[in-house]
Length: 341
Image (tube, rainbow, N blue to C red; front, side):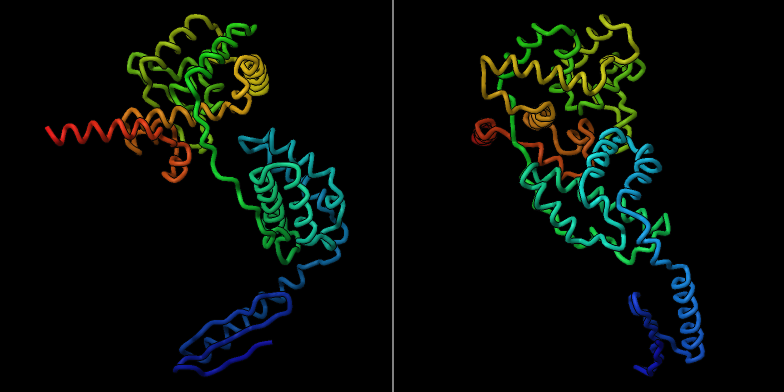
């Protein structure tokens, strides 16, 4: 259905079609308005001919998930973890529903169930992946869905950022536990994480060719943000890397898989917890948090810390920054003393 009205010295054309958002446009010339109406109606008619609602009865959510994990997931950096997540999706009852019967309520129930099992952050990532799968299907695979069933599913509120700092006695306990380990790479990995603020994946991807120890620099070609960076190294970090160069023969300085490193970390933490139970809730990523906080405590400013840590958004950087109040007090006293002098 089309309509044409004269309004404020212009012609306002409007085209309505069932299942589509009304389209409106204003013209100075009536002929142009009529031409636009005809073209818009033809475009919507072609879309209606291409739309085959019966295909929604023949296709299940599982079909979309399997195609996505086959065609899209392999090109992603985190393809392994995403493939496992989709494998879990396929076990749910809603994965067997056809696209004609899938509703936002199915994912609302999934959200509520998962919130009783895992943290809100995990649920947010799951909903985000599912929404992306449906969006790719709509935009790239010509699946005739009028709307994304995840579009209006409310995301749970994410928990506040962690503010876990590493205490000196906890580090001592961790390093002592490393001495009882059968490998010789976990201790330098832990110490280097604290000195550089590098993510676990970045540590595991370090190669000899990336080092410029004469100039205290380390290149990181592959990062979480897909933006390579070169970070300045402290004297301690250079010393650790030199020892790793001397003892290893592999091109990679930490020649282990992510899972092997994770398991070694958990075993090390378990041994340390026998002497210090509070260390049980420490995560390896908390060492990055500790490193960034230490950079600020050394007096580095936000751009300088971001150059080392790789954060692109200062708001995210501040989530990792929890300065010790007593250190700020000491700094204020020093400033006041200099002002008084």
